[in-house]
Length: 458
Image (cartoon, rainbow, N blue to C red; front, top):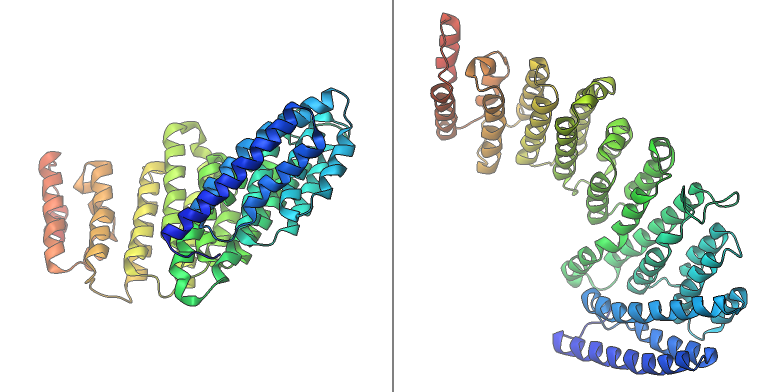
């Protein structure tokens, strides 16, 4: 991608929009006079403006949206032509004679969607043809937007359960295969952007790549909206295929975003029933991936799921969610020996919050979390990272806030062991929090050894 400064880029964008609008004007005149030949000629010239390499993703998107609006009008014209008796098969073949490959593929996708509407051929055959033909564009930016267009115009024409395009020859499996294939190719293009251009422009490229992440993520959203993707299909097909692509791309930006995207778009029930598969991928991610945020997001969603749907609590026990999460966190920390201490504590703080929400009656689980945290921090000693100590305070405050009783906290054998990692100043802060909790909840401690344990704590 060539960028010559903001002013030059604005000039390139203005010139591109002007060229696009001029050809769009002639295309509309041809459409009004039912001149198909000229309509295709001017639409191809209009789409040639998208061949530019002189725009950043943000500016290219502005140009693309202008073209997208015009293509919707062209699609309506093709649909009306089909209803008037024009052969959609001949039209599908005709647009393939456009001179340049990028305009040709945009036109092919546009006509292809009308072809699916006609039901003159199985939807899966047309979708497969389109997703494979798009491989003709290997330029990352142009390829991403082309495939984004394909995804956008085809999403309401997938052979889903209950869809008018479902039939003996077209099933939900075909819909899933199409979306996953398009997703895979888009992710490859997105990752490839990282390695294009000089090393000194790496930061700029990563910023631009970040701006494009939603183009790739929309495929996962489309997958989540397919009615026929039930738990079995998600577990056996969708999740393994998506995770395979995420792990194999070995790109930290892509891995972080796509893992988070999956957690957000698919149902909580699916995450709960496939925890072992999802968590199994975490230690395989790049060491630079912010895995604490990914896992914390997952645990927060599962906590909220348990809170809003109490009837699912037995399922958490059935799949042994706590043990799986605790084990996964340990494996992730082992796989990333350079993980900052604050990230380690944050993970256990999120796990403790999850445990207190989902299993409030299992003090042994809460104590186990604190014990795991002690085990991982034992190689560090006293903490001198202020962010890490803040997370420790949050970790230790969670049982006090949940149970409103310091007596319950005293039952956790690992509670004082975690406090040992705090420096003197933060220890005083934690002691004040404990005392405030006692006063607020008017806690009465009558047993001598409990009083002694409390004084040792503060």
